Image 1 (tube, rainbow, N blue to C red):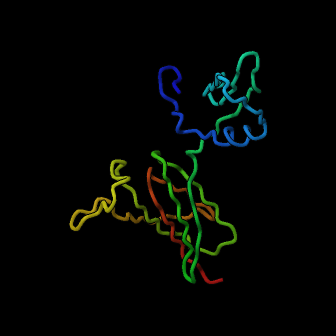
Image 2: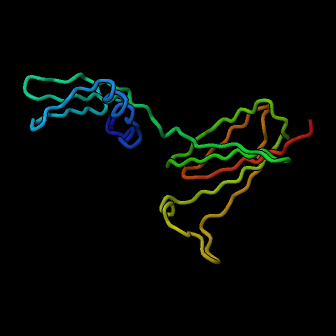
Length: 172
């Protein structure tokens, strides 16, 4: 998708699976065997962020499905676990862009500082198996101290990264 000569997003940046699945199922129209159909798919639509699709054969035209494309590259995969001394917030940014992420802590008695451990590397190394070799480690954990602001912390997650925020539990 280009706007004023600049690429704004690619089709891979958007998900249309629910348009292809849920809307198709909700608007099911049987197709005739041995009939030629013309399928029209307009990525972008008039607003630049929709998917408009339909099909036709002869005088028959299907329903027009107009579906707003939702960006899914904002996704940060996460899980939270704890043991007796620490709370671990695991964050995975699988996309090729850095992402700012705000974590809000509710009803947790933790210290005012935490440790952020990050694994990240060049995109060219992303799918290289066993990338680290003896005396040649291209991907190594980076540690940094993070200050919590009351019950909130804002993290900048690098592209293609796995991050673990380790917070110390305090006695109640």
